[in-house]
Length: 219
Length: 270
Image (cartoon, rainbow over all chains, first blue to last red; front, side, top):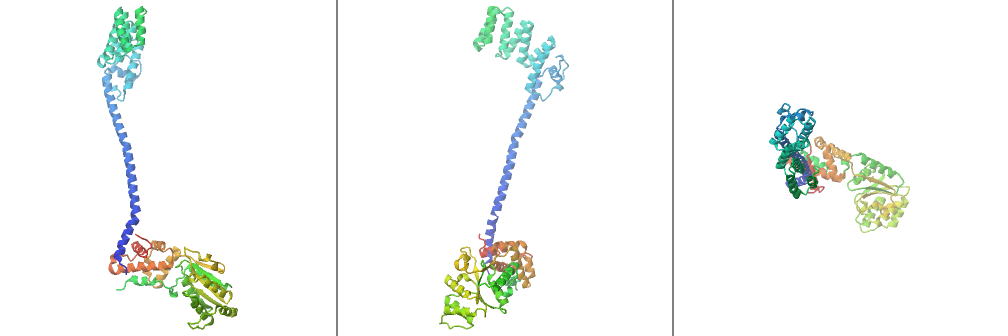
């Protein structure tokens, strides 16, 4: 009779050795599965964050219109996309929450165009002036300066150009309107002085051309 | 108390016992081929196969079956020297025993054989013939050329050398009967028949197909190895049956026991 106990021990060793490749295989499968799971999980995290950031952005955008679209008439104009009086009934609920900044600027441009098309009624200018005072948007003030200059109301053009410069001193058009309005009002020396100061700072070609025109009395 | 596995173990004690001979399809085919070759006017017949494929038992069976019909002799072990071998041949041919201190005159023996042609047809079966040297084989050939003596030469097939390729076999052997290792089916039949022959039906039934596959895998269909394996398996079973019966199932031989036997016999290693 053999030493069965010794043979049993030998068999246990053999059995462990025989099963080792299976254990390794199972371990590899587990590692691969975990890796795959981790990969998909990690892949989803940025999506989650990006979703969050989009949501945050959207929230910010939701907040912005309430500041920008102080005037309810603007939202109405945006919603209806048709030529309507600027002093249309206000309806804050009609403000589309998904609006972005780009849309906001488009709305404002549309409004300016519509104001021109509508015959530039004094009420429309008042509305824009009111909105500027609340929002200090240079687009509004510059629009008013440009419009008043075109209409020959140089005093108001000068005033709105000055308002624009106060908010943002780097808008060339505003400086040029300011100088032209001064000149038109007979304050030629002041206009030349302003333009010289501006040219000295920016070396603007257009400002130089305007300066020449004013100096030569060709404005 | 005697274990049920004790009888089963003893069934597989390796021996060339004709009573234990198991008739299998493959061995029957080899037997018929050999019997048919004997009837042909051939001088030498080669029985060829790996160790443990059943060559010896086949020769035994042939002798046992033909001994009353033909003059057939079986040399189971090779003679240690030429003198001893020719003493044996002399005895077979002349039916007389030579004194120990005398030597056979080979030329006289060949002439004696030539005189026997047409009168007697003697068949001599040489087992383990790979043990005979080339010179001895040459003399055997000369005796067979007399056509009175026919030799059946049984050879081991080994991995190291192809004995058939040797010149003295290549030019003299006219018929080759090759025995193959047992197929899975043959081996399963062999094991079952062996056990059933001793009325060990329950034990035979406890060796399932997957057990047979494992045993065949370890023994590679070699009958001698199979006997060793089965003996060891039943010996381990006997131990458990007597000492730790909870570790053994009577319905089925545990795979663990087969692997333990394989470890014991060196088929597998830790």
